Length: 495
Image (cartoon, rainbow, N blue to C red; front, top):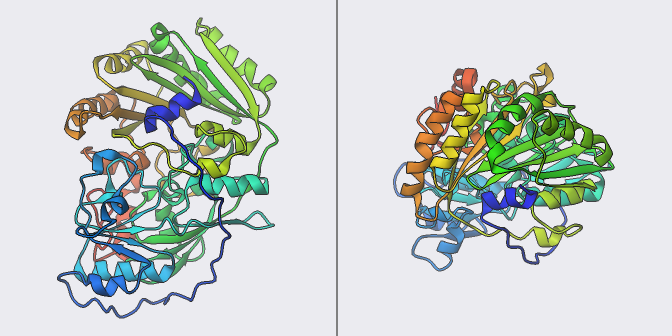
């Protein structure tokens, strides 16, 4: 399974076109009121769209030209959704105005940057969608501190980091929103060496549900800082920017792609779950299986000569050799471009959105090594279903619990996560019939935890599966910072 195939399984193929390079970053906005303002929107009732239109950079209502394009998200399953309005914002004050309207009129509200919510929550019916994509500035200072706008996508972040010779561990899909990824935890190809994306957050500039501006950090609103990092996007407020620490980018990252015979899927899965978490922290790997796919993608912090013996030991011990292999060295920037399915040294082109498609997704966390029977049962699920893919991503290493990285992310002790992905050309109902029994079966086969960034709108055990022992503390954070449930949505955290 090549790296491009991995992305194609998720995006249905990549289509890129030229886009202007990143603009300069400026946060010299007029200050937002730290205590909120008296709302001009009045009491609960019909939202005052005319008033909001005067306070945001753009507003689209269902009957207006441009609304349908403004409402689109990555997943075409949600093209028929009808948000109450889409507000395009450029400043913290405009976010504040949107939250004021939502609170005053009891209109549901959701922020959108990448628009990749598997459950379509960034295109909710009857909700005010706050489109942050104009707030995509990314600036890396000389001391390595990076400030990321609330609407920036990962490709924007990687372009700035590559230019500065720095890194943070983050995802491999170019158009995913950086804030949403971070708030859910931030699984990536560099997790085992560098930890989760959220581990690198210094502070968050947040507009709260009652329209206050807060700087949230370990020393300022520490409970909120704990909860934002791991609760997932859509909870507790809307971030207009996040400040990260960064690390020096290594000279070489080696990207590995191996393809194996289909007959080896179960045996390799069983051995991979034993092998992957025990490797040096420098080696991350993803084992993928579908009805017609069996392969491994890897990212190694170091050279090809260093990683080859580690890989050979795995598949030699399993008694199975790859049918094909590619082991290629890159610098950090080109490694991220390659994993995103983009051309080397071409960040501007990669900043264009990938081709949209229809899909449903979910996840389970691998909590234990697998028996031969369990591995075979996982493969049987793939063979018995149509358009189903499993992607197992290794954890361990620097993800493992560490007191200095206390956060709401509940899965640091897991061996791996498994993304469960169903292409949905026949529509949501047909895909749901495939997905639901598979998600339930995987809970008994590999583990019952779930990664909130692969949010599954039909999952019944989502709260406990996503947050585990952190549920009660997260509800306390919600009670303190969103007692009126302004940010509430079907899988949001409420008191």
